[in-house]
Amino acid sequence: MPAQATFDGQVIARWQETENTEQASYQVPHISVDDGHQAWTFAGSWPYDQVTLGDHVRITVNPRSRALVALTVTGPGRGIS
Image 1: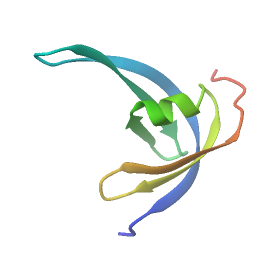
Image 2: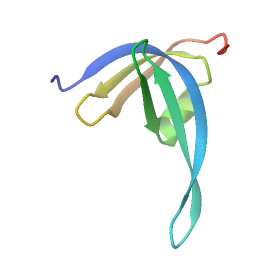
Image 3: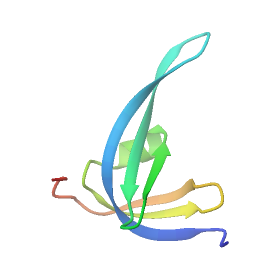
Image 4: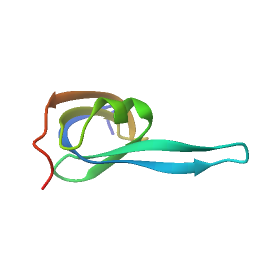
C-alpha cells in the first residue's frame, strides 16, 4: 500500500458533533468527501474551515491510517441536489 494517495472529490457533508469530557463539552467539526467510489470523513477545524458544501477538492491521504495530509479546493461547488 502506498504511503500517500491523492484523489479528486466533492464535499458532500459538513457537520459538528458534541464531544463530552469530564472537564468540558465541545464541538468537533467534520467533513465528508465523495471520490466517486467511497466517502472519506475527516474531523477537525482545519478541513472544515477550508470548504463549503459542494466544493470540488483534491485530497491527499495516508491510506493506511486514513489521515488527511493535504486538502486543496479546486473549484466551487454548485450545491448538492
